[in-house]
Image (cartoon, rainbow, N blue to C red; front, side, top):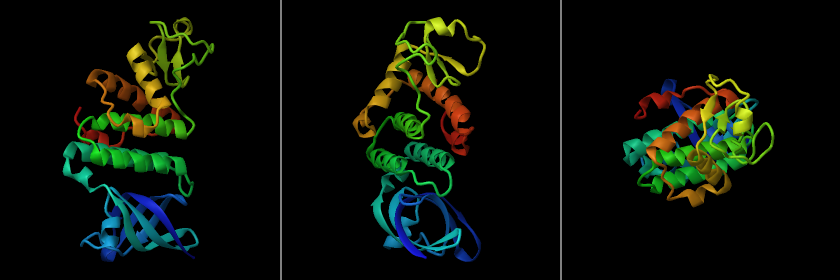
Length: 250
């Protein structure tokens, strides 16, 4: 069966005889694995569409449970991501995370659109690369039904945001000061939640990614938030440390 879909390449592996195995996040089919003999060398439309950080349109041939990419053309290139090492490494981390978030052959159109927005914004961004990645993580979690709740206490339902409140990974977000007293303070999945962290999470949750174009978090706030998100994603999605995390500045 021949078909066509728009998509973004998440990763590729070279195999024998010049072939490649492609992991494609397609708009129509979700994440699929596909073989191809197309080369990324050259400057024609198909070669550009096989490279990382490019949104393309792909001609597929499906034989039972396997796909082959017969043709490709570029829809939008985010080539400028590769011109800055820090930008490239952060964007590569987001592609790896997205790959881990997706199941095979499960369409996720909202997440696909979010990734397209992210790549477009990252290509134009000049600073705060990790802030954009953090925003993407929070919004992706929400799309996947595991969003971080900071509006009401996960236990009593109250809107308390007193100084004793915490962020609980297992509870899915905010636990007010009163309820937090009943929890084990040594639990590694409980994090201090200052007004700064709660405000940042709430703001990102409530606004489209595009409107966060100029948002740059203070390093101290972002560092705490990313530590929490790492534990949160591991617990709720079963995704532990990514390979690309070891290449990012600590």
